[in-house]
Length: 137
Image (cartoon, rainbow, N blue to C red; front, side):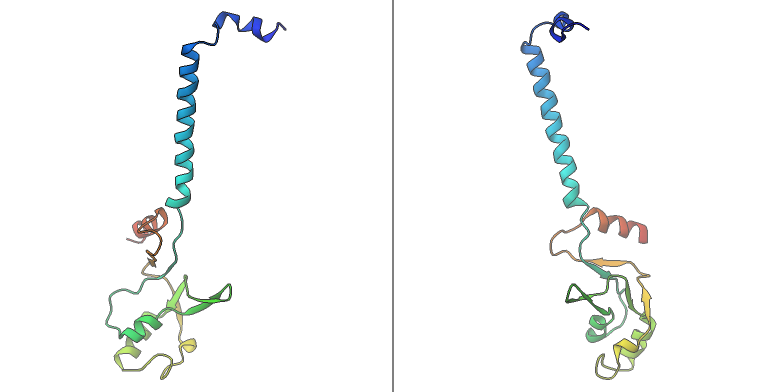
């Protein structure tokens, strides 16, 4: 095989055109990288818990409707379950106070049938929160 320089001699010397093309290719690569890194922020999953729809609940029952779980040594609201809403609604209507009149651990749990409520402490919206809102509609 011939020498590389002999093989590419017909292309010409490294001139202004080659420099411009090289520069434009580099600029396009930078913007592609920025788009890839944007996914880190756009697709983050914010803190969330089961959505409690607008029902007639006292403030105490509204706060108690999501069970607490220990995650990494900290108590957090459950991301996957809530206490059965019909039971919570009945107990609230009867005037029972959660934790005092009713042992919350005895209540039956259900999955997040009405969707999720996402925290807006860090992001106003993300791809995850928008897609799950769209799917649950």
